Each structure stands twice: as structure tokens, then as C-alpha cells.
Amino acid sequence: MSAQTPVIEMRHVEKYYGDLHVLKDINLSVTKGEVVVIIGPSGSGKSTLCRTINRLETIGSGEILIDGEKIPEEGKKLAQLRSQIGMVFQSFNLFPHRTILDNVTLAPVDVLKRNKKEAQQEALELLKRVGVGDQANKVPAQLSGGQQQRAAIARALAMHPKAMLFDEPTSALDPEMIGEVLNVMTELAAEGMTMLVVTHEMNFARRVASRVIFMEDGAILEEGAPEEFFEHPKTQRAQAFLQSIREH
Amino acid sequence: MSISALWAAYGSEYLQALLTTWKLTFFSFGMAFVLGILITVARVSPIIPLRRFGDFYVQIFRNIPGAALLILLVYAFPKLKLLFPYATCVLIATTLIPSAFCSEYLMSGMNMIEKGQIEAARALGMSFLQMIRRIIIPQALRYSVLPMTNLLVATMLTTALGSTVPMVPRELTGLVSHINTHATGGVTAFVISAAFYCATAVLIGFVGSRIDRKVRILR
Image 1 (cartoon, rainbow over the protein chains, first blue to last red):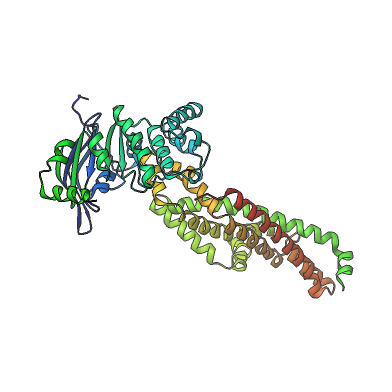
Image 2 (cartoon, rainbow over the protein chains, first blue to last red):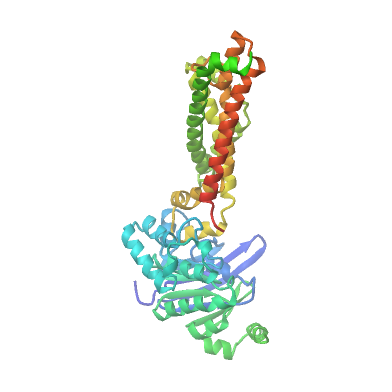
């Protein structure tokens, strides 16, 4: 694999929900260590795009490649590929009947066949790293939203993913908890994790992104370095979008 | 005959019958439970013929009257060279019917699981069976403790089917028929059995709600 092979690559991806054209000729690549932030109004297809990468959403046509390999359509190979891509959801999606520690160790033990003791040790370190080490033996409902989301990040990291997908990770959080989740994400980015982040947090995008992508109506309208995009948006739509955010 | 006279004459047989009812209930429910889980896994599996089979199974055994199933087992199956002892026929009937209900309760328990958890499990690379084992069935079971408690009581009451065949040893209802053909126990003979049924049901209900409180998922 050459150094230029993108970790995530989308080529001419199209998707329809019935007559609704939700992804329009999406071309996108994320190279190793890059943090790509996708912004845009609600319903622009950002989340759908993010979810097609590990095939939680199927696509109509085009190709999606991970490390230069096309994602398999189903079966064991797809499961194996998914295990290499971490995903963090808006609604955390922790398993409510198991402890936080179990949430983090389930997949490493079951899917990667790792030794349980070692997996637990690593899980505890990861939980400490995201600041919820004390909560390991509680069940998700006993944690705040911010703590749950950080535990969910630890759960994804425990799989040693090649890249992490964040699908609006702070949209379901109270304002005071957003910061603690963004801090963890900022640290991850600083450590060189390859990340694709769908978010409405413009300050995060400005500070952490290597590249910002602006989507509307299922299409990528604009793409560029954060300073460039936020100071001199090229398209009128991006200007209007940024304007409407600044007004508040 | 008064209750005390009946008890003096048949007390030990009543206790024997109670034990038989308990045994039948316990084995039927145990097997129905395992069968119900397997059928449910088939019904949500990615293999379409297996799904169809599971749905078909539930439709059949949820809707067939117990007596009709027992008649088939006792009178029709011997024609296929399948001759079971009466007790086995009763056990089969009182297992198959509750297994269909067990599956229905598990399906409704599964509906309580948020879709996002399944997506999270998929995103972690879990296979269908890993999801079933770790995420889906454990939660479906916890959500269905109270319906399962009802099912256990219903299974116990279904074992009264044993009274319609000359099964030995007799269960509680069978004993009532037996007494009433030999003596004049009348309704009184049934009152004793009924008291045992009720006492068992109350006990089941108590244990069931304790378990429910213990395993309930915090949300």
C-alpha cells in the first residue's frame, strides 16, 4: 500500500430513497491522519454519507474503498471491515444491559478474539483516557450523556480502528457536556487518528479540521482548509449558511 | 363428601398429583423456553426460508387448541407408526403450544431494543449470531420476564390436558375426574385441586416479579 492510498475514498457515489436523490456524485478521500469535518444544513445528506462508509446505509452506484479495497456487500468480510472503522453515533447507542466496561470489551473479545483479561485492562486505560475510568462498573443509564458519549468513543477505540466516523456526536448533548466530548475528539486528532466528523460545531471544525466539506442537498458544494472556508467561502450557499449561524 | 373426608381418603394422591403437575409444568416450560428462543432466532435470521418456517411454526402452535393437538398425538400419530406413551403425548402438547407464545413474547421484547444498538453492534463488526447472543436475546429476555411469568402459569393450566387421557401418574385435574368416577366428590374434589393451582400460580407470580425487578434494564 503506497503512502498516498487514502484510508477512506468515495468515487461517484449516488444514493436515492425512492425518488429522493440523497447523495449526488460524492467524491471524497480522507488520507491517513487527516481530520475531515462535514458541515451543512439539516437534511443535506451529511449523516447518510457518513453511514455509507461502513455500509450502515447501502449506496445506489459508485464505489467506496477502505485502504484501497472496495467494501464488501455483506457477510463475514463486511463485518471484518466494519470492525476496522470506529463509529460514534449521535445517540451513543451503548448496550444498556451491560456495564460500561463490558460495552468496551464485548467486541474486542468476541470479534477480535482477544484475551478477556487483556481486553479489560486496555478498556480501563481507554476509559481513563476519555475521563470515565471511575464509571467502568456502572450501566449506561447511570452516566450523563457526555460520559456515555465518551464511553462510546472508548468502545470504538478498543477495536484499534484505522479511522473513526463521528455522526453528529454532540447533537444530543446538553451544552455543558459538548465541550468534554469535543476535547476527547481534539486529543484524538492531535494523536494522529484519521477522522471523518459530521458536526454543527463550527469552532471545533475551525480548530481541528484539516479540511472542511460543505454539503447541501446531497452534494458536496465546497471543500477546503478551515481558515479558507470560514473566512472566504466561495459558494453563495456556504456564505448564507455561515451567515445564518453567525447571526446567533 | 366434605373437604376433610376427601382429604382423609385421597390426601396422598392429591400430593402425588400436585407433584406430577409441577413436574409436567417444569419440563414443558423448560423445553418451551429453549424451543421458543430457537424459533425466535430463526424468525429474525437473515435466512428467509428459516424466517418463514419460524413464522409458520408460531402460527400453527399458537392457534391449535390443546385438546386437538393432543388428539392428533394420541390417535393420529400411531397411524404414522409414531406411538408415544400418554405422558409423552401430553408433554409434547404442553411444550409446543407454550413455545409459540414464548417466541411471540420474545419478539415483542425485541421491539423494545433501540435500532441504534443494532447499528452499533454492526459497526463493531459483530456477526448475526454474536448480536443475537450478546445484545438481542439477553435484552429481549429481560423485557419479557412478566409475560413469561404468565406463560408459566398458563403452561401449568395447560397440563390439565393430562386429564383427557389415561395418563399415569395422574395430575391435579386427572385426579379430580378419577375421584368423581369412584366417589361423589363433586365440586369439592375440584376445590382442593383448584387451591393447589392457585397457590402455585401465586408463588410463580411472586418469583416472577422479583426476577423482573432484579434484571430490569435501566433506561
